[in-house]
Image (cartoon, rainbow over all chains, first blue to last red; front, side, top):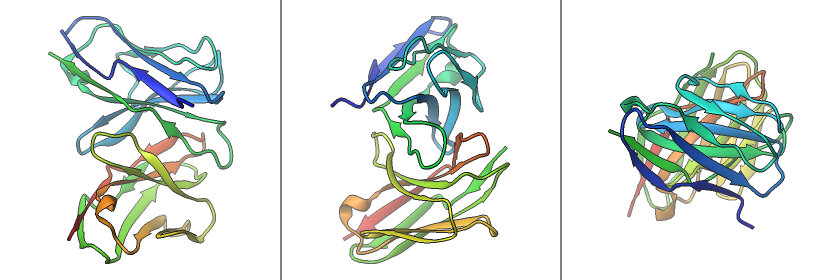
Length: 114
Length: 109
């Protein structure tokens, strides 16, 4: 059982380029999330999806977009990367959004924008 | 919005006990989570509290006081492998998680 996979593991990107971070889960979880983690700031929610076909904005959504065409996949796109988007990106999923539902995290993507 | 505070760093000796405090101010409350994160790895779930009181799970315990906006994670019989960051996270009224910046615990021999 793979759980949650993310690709690429790491990437160096020129500013202004478009980039899509991939996230796939095989647990049939309804809810999925994208976070960025920066030193001293902790994990911050970028976008989320409570179920396939729906998405919502988190704390820091500007410069990012997501889609949720099916249950398993939740890609995160940077339309025109900027250096402030240099971060470690974690995808997470949970069975649902109510009651006791822990989030399971993928291994992360380390992105550097030059 | 959410305001979640926890100490930046703590150091303890192998075999000792360490208590990591977390205070929060949130718009709505639907539970508090603790996660462990080793350097360069993903966070992994440790504990969950939604009612006041203590939850014990092996060497780890977590306490919650909703009226005080306060939680702690207690790590007993510390081992070298417990050196990691510990993240306090509060689930708000919309069932989204907000994380504190994390507490880095260093266990010394």
